[in-house]
Amino acid sequence: MTEVIMPKMGDGMEEGTLLEWLKKDGDKVKS
Image (cartoon, rainbow, N blue to C red; front, side):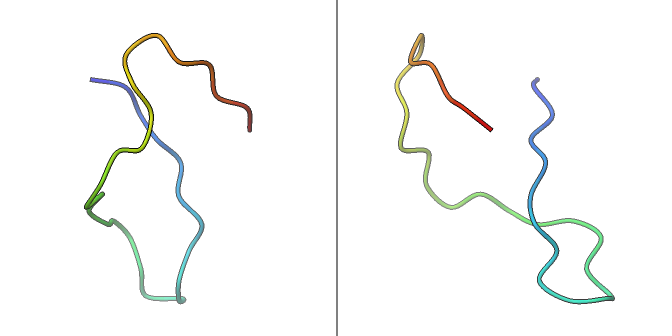
């Protein structure tokens, strides 16, 4: 599994859930 860094939505946020993945396998992404 790949770690995905998400922006914090509040001071108490420690984890989140991705509801939809918009990229296909092999697509390049830029941070």
